[in-house]
Length: 251
Ligand SMILES: Nc1ncnc2c1ncn2[C@@H]1O[C@H](COP(=O)(O)OP(=O)(O)O)[C@@H](O)[C@H]1O
Ligand SMILES: [Mg+2]
Image (cartoon, rainbow, N blue to C red):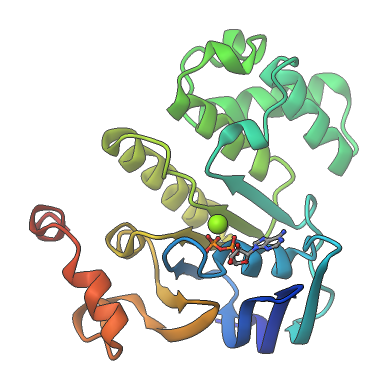
């Protein structure tokens, strides 16, 4: 696998708060990398730093060495957030929102873009895609809204998808379906996925590699299977020990 980006001594401060502290991390093109840590550990800050979307009051230091041009948020990087409302406009049909994204990144006629939007709606498994095209976000369930947010995130064919706690607001069955959808899309489109979660078991269901963060520091990184079976750090061990047995045994 080729390298997508190498972080060298990356730190991010918000005034007196050090949100990321001297992070060294390699992200490979085409891999699924899980970023794990409890709330406040710096996961979202890392995602924003990678996408060049840090707020103005944040100060970034260190190096981010991209292979070639850094990707641009929107075109090269798709984002999925915990709350699909962050990516859906409540006042627009979901089809129109998809068409807008598709047409802002590819020279397509309206009808071609509409066809592509319907295909995306179908791909994320929303029933009756043609009818769904003309519905508003509030007409869908929470899980369906998250599927639509995923469709929007991949509509411009980004090579990097960042999913920041995309299933934390959903119940377990829906969570499992969303994980399957993400895993399928990553395989099919050969995308790199950065999957952010506080749940190490959930991360284990999708990740090739894992990076565990605590208080802005990277405390352990490596192959997912290896970290889950032989964690080197006490905090990682504690995260694994906290996973309910039932969840662990069904893999
Ligand atoms: N815009 C901001 N301004 C000030 N502090 C922030 C801002 N965003 C995040 N922080 C702080 O930075 C730290 C890391 O936050 P964050 O990256 O959101 O963590 P996570 O996503 O792991 O919950 C926390 O202490 C948080 O309060
Ligand atoms: Mg966060």
